Amino acid sequence: MRVHRCYQIGCRELVPLNHRYCDQHHKQRHKDYVNKQSNLTESEQARRSRDSKRYDQQERNPERTAFYHSTRWIKVADYVRSRDMYSDQVTGNMVDDGASIVDHIVPMRLCALPEDKLDTTNLWLLSRRTHNIKTKLEQSMDDNKLKHLDRKWWTKVLREKM
Image (cartoon, rainbow, N blue to C red; front, side, top):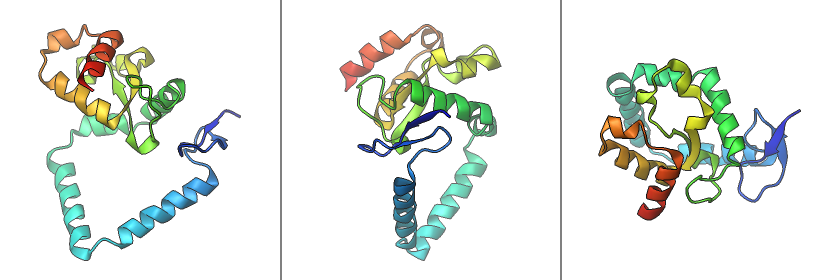
């Protein structure tokens, strides 16, 4: 059976690939989540629910949502996290699962074929902070240029920005 280390920083427990945390940390994270949710006021819970529904109905792209929730994407993303050893590929820092993003080096919208969206050579693991910086840079660039930028170029530029 294939295993990996628990995503909890500092924990060295081995867990199956289809789990993210060891039993101890899974229970602790669930307990923390329940406590956090129960401490929200009713008006805050209602506001979050209303905002989430509005976002889902008006802003979220249904095709992308379906892609990122597909079984194939989840398997590929888990593979990339394992391959990159749960570390930000620009800074080298370990990334907590909640703050990790499997990112397309060449943006997904520019992939010519549907299979290219799942090509692991075009994917890398970034922290949320690094991903946000990369996204801002991408938004200011021309699509033609974005098609030709590689991992080495992005690493150099992102290190300079941090």
